[in-house]
Image (cartoon, rainbow, N blue to C red):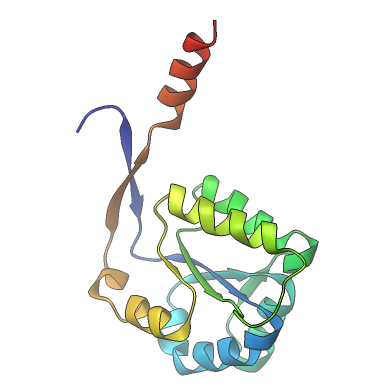
Length: 157
């Protein structure tokens, strides 16, 4: 492979972010309860209210960030950039307007840029969580941002 890309490895033990809009929080909690045995083998985090609700209902330890409208989506996006989150389950509500919609779109974009698996509904989350890849390391390639920045700086001179 050329130096335009770098290989990142998602470990056997995944760092999973759990996010749900208000109209989908109960569905997220139910999904976590149904998949508790699998999820307990991974590191979990989530936006504020969702993380708290999952922990209270299931006993799973979920590290909470801020609520989505208070910057939680952006915090999770930053953790993706830092390589500290490598899997996102985001039950979004397609029927409710979200005041922090630009933050949600930014999170979706950063997950794409960093080639992070992301489920936005229960069916996709089920397929991903029950994939054979959940039990092994996974190498994926992302753009070599350091090279791109260097090239851009040189072209702007």
